[in-house]
Image (cartoon, rainbow over all chains, first blue to last red; front, side):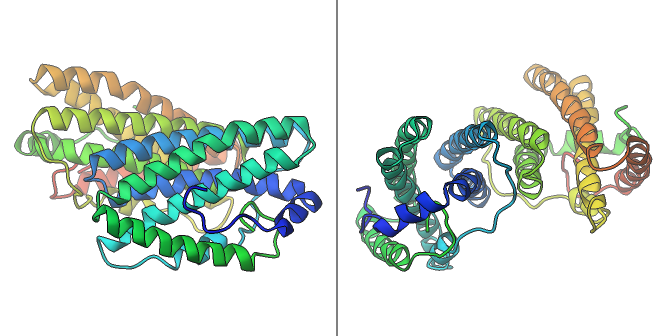
Length: 191
Length: 191
């Protein structure tokens, strides 16, 4: 699914069941981080007109999702607070090469993989959770993650030949699957 | 005007006349930096619901303006590129106190002053420039800067008593006027 090399382990759904509140709070943080990632890419590659246009659209959409999660959290009487992130994002970002144009390719592909994993997990949540509101919520969100995944992969191909990008995507997807396999003891969206 | 302690020196309009292209390119960067500032404030004060809502709206609006400037630049056949920033923003940010809640107050008030100065200069551009399209463009933008100024000042008052915030705003506005007085040799929106 969307270039991912693994499906999520059942362990993760157990983490969700035991810590739904933390997952929801982390989800809000994820939307905000996704907006920040798009904003940073815009800053770093300001001369790429297509990238700027797409990143702006993603920033706006992620912030809308952030507010949807915040409202949902609030309706449930859960206090939103700044929560320690899991290790997933950091571990993935450490894989990025430092030199251009590889740096651009890697940052875009890492963003693509995070969107892909979010998409996979939102579908899992839609199918697994009993709560009708949450089922509908995650059912309504996963498509945009898939769309962002494609946008990031397409933009990576403005920095290197398509076959090179595809090969690198496979490498990074294998590394991503290994990170997911190890997991993170904190209950988070990408644990 | 909007708590500013000075009007812009005529020197600045001379810089504009001699380097209009650079001013336009820097203006695009300013809109992007304004979006990033709002995004960073959202990250730092994620528990402040009102702040998050307002910052999201500002991010979206600044990105819209960024694209308006980019399109205008493109229509004029000017190449957009990553340009070295002037010294204004850095000098202002150095004035911020490091400890909370003063840090929050200062970062919000500094953002308020940058919006105020932009507003003042957009009005100057509207009145000074001969180019009909640019006159209209700057005439259409200054109001949102004034609105953002008020939002930032109001949010600062969620972190300290109103009279304390007002006093600090006067201090920072005096420092801002001194920075503007010295100026910056690079032709920029805030030189």
